[in-house]
Image (tube, rainbow over all chains, first blue to last red; front, top):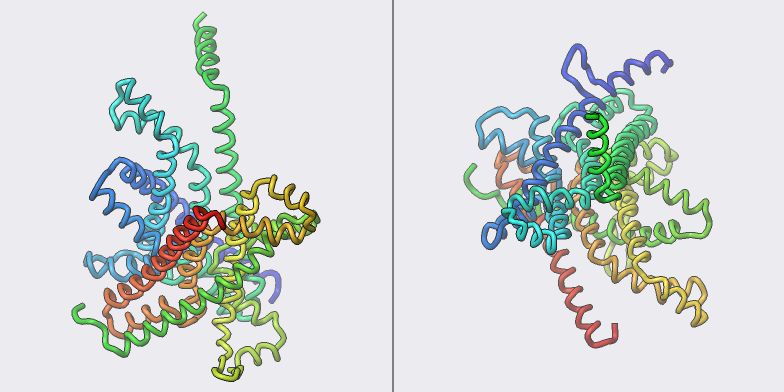
Length: 246
Length: 243
């Protein structure tokens, strides 16, 4: 195969049939990752707050639901959403949506445990202090517990997001034209370059995950550095305002 | 949507479940052994070895398992010499005195290798965390007793590291069971594959996936119960003072 033939193949792998058809390939993987990452963060926050604010029967039911999503393989949940949702809802759900839905649910279930653990880690003294200042339970959670808990649980968020990026490759099973699916398609058509193709695919995923990890860790490190000198930011801001007034 | 699955299809699912359990067990054994080796390599004094081990972890942790499996299945097949592939693809039996051990199909081998390479990084990191959890005083005490580096590792550090690492290791074993479902992409007839097959044959979607889901949850629950039993036993052992 000559060098010129590689360009359309590479373009197909990265973008799918994009300008003339639906988005596919690595670009679709990226879009799926971003959407399911955001959704899983929302579900995880809501689930974690619900887990730590409920007691008794409601808490047990929630724990069971979260446990269910953590115990089944992602692939199984994709089957459930892909084959059963259209049957139960009597609507045609596109494969892409069902996969994003499954990924968000699984990621959310894992994250809600981290959120609960994060809240538990800052809870004891901080909640009592907030309540004694006259805040309600929700205010205490919103203004005192969560801001501190988020900082503690950022590493597990990053971990979960990295594994979400990797899990988008499972959309291959239900025929969503994302990166792995197209790679397999190209591999089946060319037949002779499986090693090169899959090494390239692995490399692109490695790049995606590393970039996410790098920026998330930097962002986290930055946030910690900013928070270290305790009350200083307020003072500097105040002096800044004063100087602007005079 | 009504009615339970016919015995024939239940048999398929049972066979798939058997395959899932077998593959998971094989991967757990090999990944644990290699995981200890990886943890030792990452703690090695030789900087080159440490760097290679870190690179291995970076590469295998940050690329999807599915891509790795496809690589082993399609890619490795072309890298190996033709005669090896023919040998791997033809059935072999290993006859021991009482039972015969059939050589598994190539899908199984590829799945085993792929899952092992992937799981080793996670298991190895858990072991490394366990070793870091052993207090420095233990190394010094072992040295003071005159143990060589290997003896220190074998008789002092490893037993304590294993105790620290067991709960997260159980979580990794659960992940191995769940990840074994991905081998359906390379055509290994394990639980997910057979449930999908039963679904296409009978259109009893709910029953097929329901049965598979329940079996997965049961396996995960069994590991969890094992962990709880281990915790209770080791707590007793601690109390008796002979841990």
